[in-house]
Image (cartoon, rainbow, N blue to C red):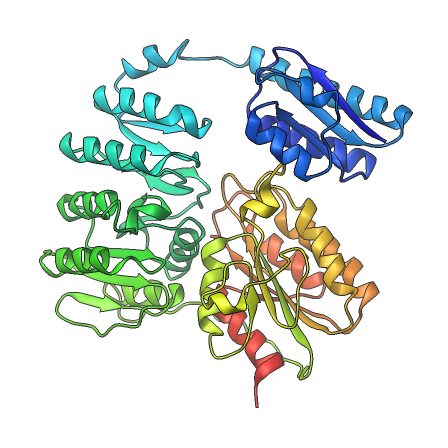
Length: 491
């Protein structure tokens, strides 16, 4: 039975609500649970999920809706549990020390950077205030209008400030990780990138080879489009060129629009420092002070060898079975890693919800066909749920679903460590792997770990959990993808 509980005039952050709803899902083993503010967009979301009742339709934007599909008695218990979780979070917030009583007060202090994670519609106003106050801005939020992004980035450039985002998932500024970020050694490599998981993969590979970071600057995925013109990425290059601790600059992104790619390459060519550039799927030849890389691992290796020609990345050695005639099912949390895997397997017909070849689009993103690579960080999977790097509910369900298909031969799963991610991602995946193997004992699990040895989850302990569950574990996404090729596609 569908039930909507409405809490009038009860604003809460969307991430808080998603985490609270997930706590109830896990407690009652019921996936049909959602908690959202009753904005028009969220009402559409609930309706698409089949969780909006006639009563819920009466809610106003400032109201909170807790929606559940369960019998009446169970629904009441679930709502009570939700309220208990929310009360505990409210108590934590009230007891925490708050150094700034308002945004106005915060803008008056000497901090150089403002990090924003607020609904996208509020970003333009607040980001403009921060820029006018002389602050660099990182915007974790998405759903910011493109016209506002362009306007704010032009304002930042005019004031010689950085505007990172919107939808900027990863930065490391002066050694401090922002968003999804890993614990990386300080060093002489600077990164500017229009990618979150790609930056994490790159920095972790560099860290494993003994080098470190000066500054890591994310700029948001739309920055490399012609409409934006690479404004923030070019500004980041200027900053890294002037940074005395930066000797090598790495640029990474999905393929930029041609005019933006030309700007980036021309600026690098005129620079005083050594560059490594990886535009995923674009294969270019080295010239002058620029080395090009075809994948993230190669970008890391080439950057490190500019500082230490003997730098070597650890390699995992596994005896690989042959499973010809079976299919690959990859379930990624990192969008750039999924895109890189598609590129590395470009000679094979693989379907995806984010395909390089649009003819290979999955018609139903919730059902794999033949060989399929799925980016579960896309909107279809995150409506009403936290990002899959934080919450494993949907990925575990999809792993179980893939295991029920006798045609499934390999399941490829990325495992990301670091700040902002789940505190035990390997434990979550290992549990799902063990259950899936019971269903389909012939499945091979392949798992790359994106993480550093300094990450709070403990890299070695995470690796051990995955291996004990039966997974073949690799240090990079490329290594894992090549193992999959050997298992399923080698002649």
